[in-house]
Length: 88
Image 1 (cartoon, one colour):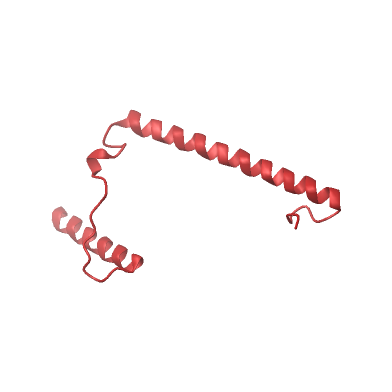
Image 2 (cartoon, one colour):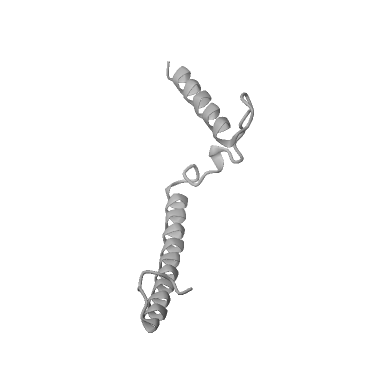
């Protein structure tokens, strides 16, 4: 019973993906990486390392975004402009 449900779910997901990418109906979708190569298959340590790397990257992007916003605000304040709008 679960095998039938899993197969049906996969077929529906594959058909939806084919539709979303604009491929002709019936186009086979093959995964680029097998589940055996995923971090979760390599164990909890690999998954935790991936999560830490993602957090570090997000924190760096957040700091860069905040610095950009401070520069925009400082530039607009000097012109007497609106702090929420970037300088032209």
